[in-house]
Length: 243
Image (cartoon, rainbow, N blue to C red; front, side, top):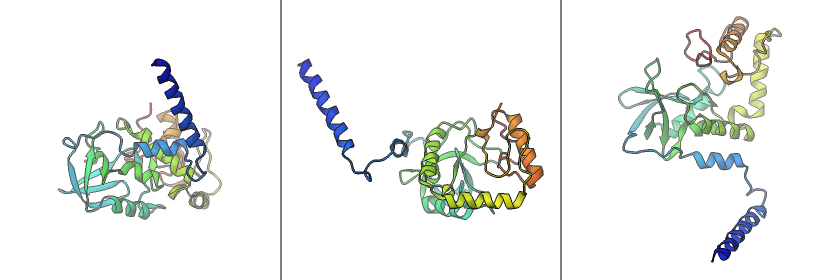
């Protein structure tokens, strides 16, 4: 009996290998795609504990307003600010996903940010909205402690968007942004500490808060703005969660 079970397992394994091997190129997908597709409905949610709310207004690509005029900031992601490239596209995409619909709000660690907005993962029609926006190239993954439980999931989505050159990661959009930056700030773009003000950097590109702060102040002096958007709270402190 034991020998029979072993042979059966070997047969099934060979069958699976042969099945995937003979798939046509169009049918073959990368491991990243498999991972992203498998986490859209992650984590398992307790519908009774996570109530649903009607979305009455979309503020921008990463903030919505629910019934009762309560604002909700989608976590582990960030979209362009007003006046920046892809601001309108990100806002419109979020509107199509959630506006006028009942959504489920899932808390991580924090309840609200300093602006009084709820910090939540959002689900609509079975779709993990935070992940979906990043996956389609309308936003970037943004890790802000302590609410990072699903940031790794959203990071996979960003890698997928880059690989497929979707939205903000489309080559023509990247080149356009780089050209715009170069025209705005001229040649004086580098500091002594591997900080430049031409292409976008994130907090994850810096080892310490001090390093991020120096880059923030350097680019602020040159471009007259928070070029890398390292100071999300507009308090003059860059990447404050870094040590």
